[in-house]
Amino acid sequence: MRRPSTAQQSAARQRYRVPGNALPTRRTTATTKRYSPYVMAMLMDRESASTVASWFQGMNPELHDVSPARVLREQELETAGPAVLAAARSFVAFG
Image (cartoon, rainbow, N blue to C red; front, side, top):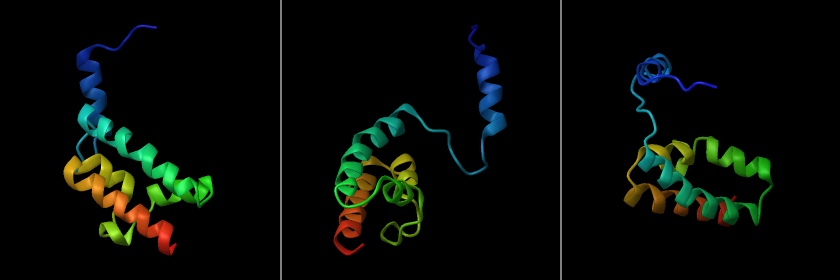
């Protein structure tokens, strides 16, 4: 299978871009991969897989009604990581 050219890739990115949302970069992907497994393991000790998936995708009051996945993807590592860990600990402790 032939890879699309750089121009085709750029056109596809522009077509699927949502106004106000930046496309994920390698840094944000690495950030998500660094914290997600740790948080997931912590939550899976107490909750079911579907609950953990919902927790990552749903709005979280500890994170100002933003989903943990979005916080990890869009914010800086120094603030996003500890905030998501604190929210996960709160969820484990209080439900």
